[in-house]
Image 1 (cartoon, helix red, strand yellow):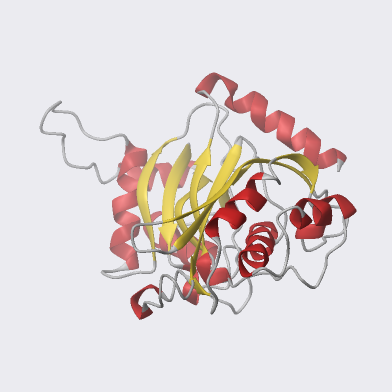
Image 2 (tube, one colour; image 1 turned 135 degrees about the horizontal axis):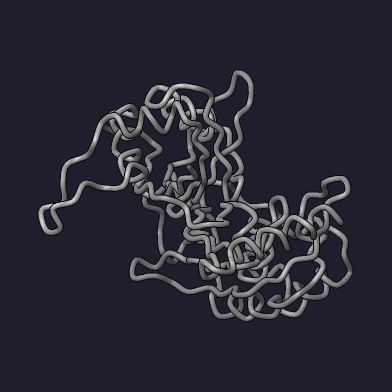
Length: 286
């Protein structure tokens, strides 16, 4: 049985998603909780391996259960639905049991567990990921209640110039200038959306959507736009830096605290397996 998990977390006290010996991670915390519920050694496959300090509101993972784990999950039938008179699917029972293990005020939760559609792979079936990055400046003011999910810049930022710079980067390009290099990993990505606005409180919020992201790409992209907002770079500079393919000191990788993975997109159910196969083949050829 493959189960889809919809997950949220405050990344402040985690050293990123991936399990690491001796360090607290989102993956390790969830797998340990699932192990207490189902036994065995659960292993989660995730849509986006977020870095240390990065948050998630719409993370997606999948989990494969063996026969013993399926039996343990089915052994405790859930309450019947009042409207239909039927009990929930066994996969749907997992999320509340994980939440029970995590406790009353955890910094990670599983909102929903559901039977995965045929061919579903949380990582390789995904067609896009969406992030939000939040920045407070002197115009919005600093709110200490928002400090764990908002970066602070001590300047008056020009949101119109930042938005123009962001939109100039959209498309299929090599983003090596905005990525931390990893050996034998491609830096070619399709940036589907990138824009800035001020929300009702004055906070600057970036919407960033791409087929996938390379290491530190979102935080470098927003760093370039902040440099434009401060007047240290011109709007046209951000595309020129991208096209030159070299990292420059004017582009800072902003703090992880401002970044949240908000959603992951998947194709229709009948295209899930084909998408996963296509993505694996592309990664193997990189």
